[in-house]
Structures are given as structure tokens and as C-alpha cells.
Amino acid sequence: MEATISGVERETIDAGWLVLRPFVAADVPWVYGVSVDTEMDRFIDIPSPYRLDHAAFFVEQLAIAGWDAGTRYELLAEDASTGERLGRVGLGIGPRGAAEIGYWVDPRARGRGVATDAARALCAWAFRRLDLDLIEWRAEVGNDASRRVAEKVGFLMEGTLRQRLVHRETRVDAWVGSLLKSEATRCSRP
Image (tube, rainbow, N blue to C red; front, side, top):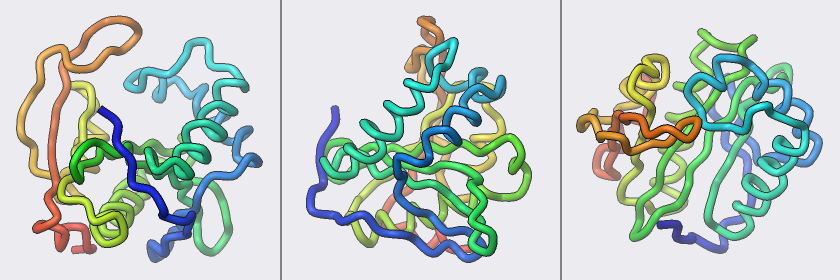
């Protein structure tokens, strides 16, 4: 169930070597380029074949309009020194002070800690700025890279949910983890 947290103006989050900024229309070609990567298609239920209009929908309707509506907070992770686009991290707002986090990284930037540092910064910001009580993480069983990121950020792995996600019109099992507001100190760098 989707809920809203309204009145939060778009803002940039300082994440050390990364800057997390709201999406703009000029990000559509980059989203398209990243989304045609075979690893994205492996664990994320995106349209296949992926087209430029799918990227435009993500940026314009989900990221930009979602922020304005208070239903999603999507941010693009950039290298603070070069401005290079590296990845995406976002929150879908759920009912009663909860949200679900998601992230992906440009294939050229994988293995550099982008997702971990971006997720840490977003979680810390969300607990403070959105006054969330709980952030949940879910990923298809077997998505070990996403699980490693969630564990490094401080999410407690709670278990496996049977056939909880749909990927390519097939129900698949999902790992689930959570991070509570009272555990927000886990969001800080070790």
C-alpha cells in the first residue's frame, strides 16, 4: 500500500564522495543506458525489451512526479568531484511511517561502494527528514550483491518470503530485511 509524505522539497544530500540529487529530465538517456544492462534485467523486474520511453516514464513519472506527490524519493548518485552519474537509490513510501529502499548502479561503477554509501546516506536522511520509523529492503533470493549492500548499511535480515516478488511474470522468493529508526546509527560509516 502506497502512502504519502508531502511537503518535502527536492534537495541534494551530501554523501561524502557522492552527491545524491533528485532526477531531472536530462537523466533519461543515462537511465536508459544503465537499464539495458543484462545484470539489471537479471534481478529487477523492468520491461523487456527496455526502451527509451520506459526510461522517460521512470524519470518523469516515478522519480520527479513521485517526489512531488510524496510517494517516492528517488535520487541519482553522482561522483562529487566529477559529476559522473554512478547509480540510483530511492524510497517508496508505505503506510504508517514505513518505506522500502531500492538501488542500482551503473555497470561501469560497480564494485566502488556506490550503492552502500548512497543507501547509508539516504537512510540517515529519511529517518531525519521524513521521520520514518522503518525502512524495509527486499530482493529476489540470489541477488547476493544487493544483500551485501543492505547488510553493510545495517539492515537486519529477517528471512525469506515465499513467492513474494514477481519477476518476468513469475513469482519468486524474496529476502527481506529492515532498519529501524532506533538503529539509525548503523547508517553512519564504520
